[in-house]
Image 1: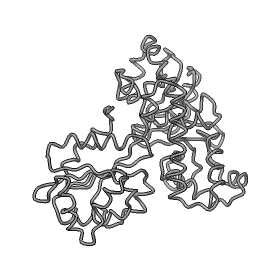
Image 2 (image 1 turned 90 degrees about the vertical axis):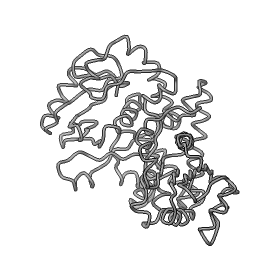
Image 3 (image 1 turned 135 degrees about the horizontal axis):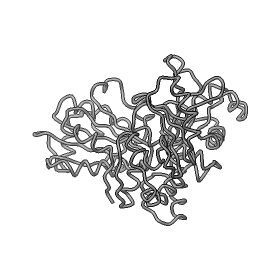
Image 4 (image 1 turned 180 degrees about the horizontal axis):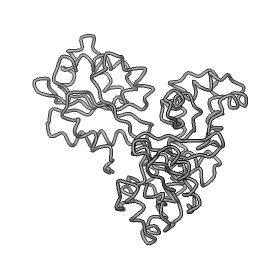
Length: 394
């Protein structure tokens, strides 16, 4: 089943541009389906879709003289006598393919559209010589808006928070409450969302996690202390939305701080976790400040972590806020904090299971001191109070 992903509206204008398109993201987020959808949009018949996970298809590019690759592509009905479109799925299965891609790009009228399963692959396999030749797009598990689309449900959305606050109503809230509860518990991996049976959802989530651990961690990372890496992962799952204390983690695991940092870096590069920096007027402090951790998907958290409903809500809200631009958190020395600050629109957001006017008043005092122009409580439960937006509207 091919259902429209929002990222397509960003990618489509690039299909007729010269640069190589690279789509990266965690396994099972829908990169192959997205690639197939773009393939179908190209009306030119001089196109080919190649799955590099297929060993026979890999042989197409195994030529010492790269210009001979066209002879191999001829069997697929593609020629270099006119503009060619070459779609390559899962380039990490054939890392050395980057060199022939560069050669063909530089010497022929060819448009490459590629997928790779993580930024880790791209950083290690894509040489600097491709700088300026590629545009990279990152695909994530479904936003709640996309989740509803996969469920065959339409929901009116509003671009700014003022409209979200103004247009909330109790009837619509109850219409979407059940869907949002499912989204909080099982997340947004397409395969999981399209499955109705809860037992099957759990099976798919376990398989996604195992696939990540076996295909990405074991094959790519070559960590000597694989058990320590696994244990760090389990510790992090209990700390969703919390500030990371690197020394404490290192002590609990019996490893060095540098090792913890290297594990965190890998988890970030493979899209398994996201580290949120503190908001500061000083850029250096933003870079060096203690970070908060969030996970790729709520389904993974629910299955392997023992976390509160509040943590699940905060993780889901974070993922849906990324579409508004840069996201930070804020905490004063006194301990008062703001869950999320959207610097591009100068907006402060505090996430609550049930938001109140008292919460809003507290948030406003802190956000005013930071010269933020808007502030809202994001509430899972319905509230008609001003300044409160509903979580499923974010």
